[in-house]
Length: 292
Length: 147
Image (tube, rainbow over all chains, first blue to last red; front, side, top):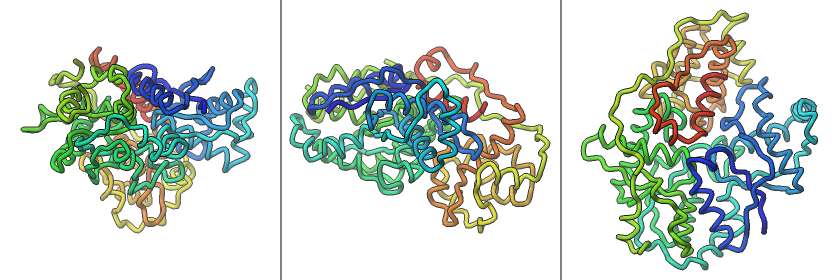
């Protein structure tokens, strides 16, 4: 199946390896991702005040362009893009007046008719491909690799646009098991990584990384598996910086789930671009025999 | 290899608003118009504060923020709390009175931003950070702190 893909800005810059691995695993599973002919920044954070329709324009314009390409769904890789697009989709679904106002404002665009469904790539893997099918295609199980699944915020909240249970999510847990890895559960799996505060409150982001990762380490995790590019930066880079703030603290490696799926499917490890990580994940992969 | 420990102290910190903007009506009315939440439903149980990942760094806890609004206490607009909130929605998810506190925080930020008050400055970031910090962080910081 060919899925229409909405990238977002970060997937074209600091998270190109998330995109690259997602394209490769979609292909390995008999599907493909086709980038939208035209897209714009989604605005990253959803508009939260009753009278602020202006910030729904950017996400809505993307939904219109998906509609123009004749597709009834789009796949996203970035958690924040997915959340923002889903929230705008929900707002115009619940309010015909708001949709009419937004359509009128963008008079150079076609009207949106509420026809596009926004999917996180994890939803695609879980619901369209199926983890049972994925499991059968695993060539290099992640045997012995103890992974803490980290969900963060925007995949799960607000509840109306969540891809899983807001308090007890399982999608990443199930994915780790399908890949042959071992799940290390951690109550901090749904706590914020520090998000954009990584810019004006660096230490706070390092504190968050320390709190989340150190508990995972205490419970025996070798690494953390996540989805969001901003969570990756905060846990990986700000987590590495936390080593100078906390005695005897050593940050464990951070993986995108797509990197681990790629390795488990036996794809070339080069596409993972592990050299982009602040904490090198290659030693633990070699130690566990996942990488030669 | 990226991610070298940067021990250099920076000037980047959450902004502090000292000049409280004048409001046309009462604070509670303005907040409720912007967020459409029934703030008076709050019975001060503190569940929002118990789950907030940033509460230890806040000057007012989220339940105190609600209390200040109900009392029409404009000092809440000076609070660091409203800028530390990253809109993670944990408080909104767990509130037993179904008050979306995340939207309340946004309403308070908007009251200030709509008076053209903002003090965001990223000049403290190193070239390396400007290159490596994900774009989504910049866009969301500017959306939250500038408008």
